[in-house]
Amino acid sequence: MSSHREAPEISKDPVADNTDVYAFVSPDKPDTVTIIANFIPFQNPYGGPNFYEFGDDVLYQLHISNSGTGQADISYQFRFHAEIRNKKTFLYNTGPISSIKDPNWNRPQFYSVTRVDHGRSRILARNLAAPPVNVGIRSTPNYAKLAGQAIHTIGTNRKVFAGQRADGFFADLGSIFDLGTLRPFQMAHLIPSAAAMGVNGLQGSNVHTIALQVPISDLTRDGRRPKDVLDAKSVIGVYASASRQQSKILDGGVPVWHGPYKQVSRLGNPLFNEVIVPMAEKDKWNSLPPSGDKRFAGYVTKPELAGLLPVLYPGVFPRLAAYKKPRADLAAILLTGIPKGVVPGFQNYTGPVQADMLRLNVAVPPAKSPNPLGLVAGDAAGFPNGRRVFDDVVTVELRAVAGLTIPLVDPAFTPDDAAGAIKDGTSNTNSDYLKWFPYLGTPAGGYSSKPGMPAVS
Image 1 (cartoon, rainbow, N blue to C red):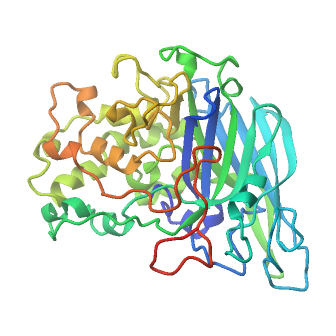
Image 2 (image 1 turned 60 degrees about the horizontal axis):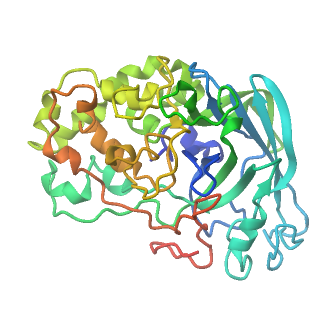
């Protein structure tokens, strides 16, 4: 979760594993959209001397679909390369790193950014520096400053960052994967125990983040900034992917890649591949474009988890157990966007093509008082209208699967009382989110972190 080890094969290739995608109208720059994609899950902060970095052999991409086809109309491509400054030492750094240009940093990494617009490529930037990881108080004594130096401006009113951040996703992984246990409600579980607070399984973990902030007009169908929420042109679809070349040959133990790039990971909505797609099809799903997701629609309209909840929590979800209609509410939320007329004054419908993407209505302004439960709590600037870094997507999706959103499309249905209360009981226990780009918090530092203890920046 959200997509940290979601498929058998990609779990063996973490450098290409896309863990989370976020897309939102920037709260501090509302004429821009920020898109964030995280990779390399469950990073141990003290994982040296070969600390985490982006893959030089991976093509990372952020995709925007604005034509209603589920296909990428605009893509931003990121390619990385690492250098070794001192080939006579095993050290990541040979002294304190005071800047991203400091020669004490022995393995700097650089990247290029290319925009592909309907098949036409244009390189936006070359040799942009990523920051080092947060090694510790001696090696990286002012990490916030280092990270700030790695925020690059490209063109006018456009920013990019690629580097380590604190994982902003939160979920009780240890409990959920133990037969679907939700600690606050485990007294009602088939195998009961006393209710307890949730435990964030991502506590202390870092990720590698690619963050891009661009004018809204860069991403819309007609190159304008829409103002009408009900205008179809105000909605974009967003997803991210990682690709590798088709074949790998070991040359003296060193992998050499050949052939065209093939997608090995993708992500739009949180938890889609993790919870909805069956295990036997997860890696296949990762290799396909969202435009082909019609083949997986049956798993959305009849989700396995909706059938498991009444079994795991006997007597708690009788109405959900009795509901046999296809889940049109989930199909709208996850595959097409929400059409006009379902939620008053709102829509993020991209058309009938079923495709797993975050759908963002860019005409919805940032909320003055954001609610982490997003649209279901009346905050139309939040998930599933895009996704902000602090949105509690686990609670939102649990409640949706439990039937809370069925009345949106079937007013005759009354959800079980538990559907509006179900949650895993967690919140972010890593570094605080930032109020500015790149929004995710300072990564946990290696020296300051201890096994089994909360992470410390």
